Length: 65
Image (cartoon, rainbow, N blue to C red; front, top):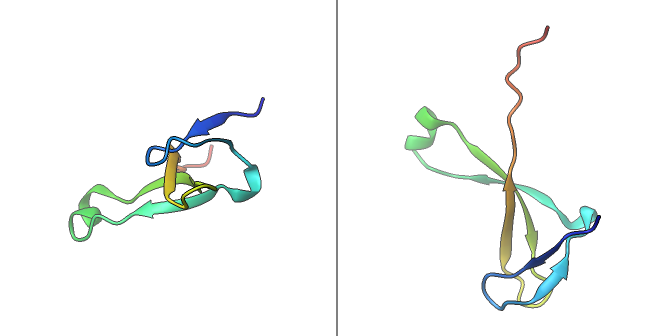
């Protein structure tokens, strides 16, 4: 199923193309050292070019079983 999203700035509705989705990291400066970095999937609006945050990425815990 292809999901349609709406831009928060210009209200343009468009489909999410897998090739255009990118990972972005929220930079919290010094406080980011203690809380860790937050990673999100984002896409650029084809109409106005602003960045739309889609959903947060889960971080692998590093423990192997």
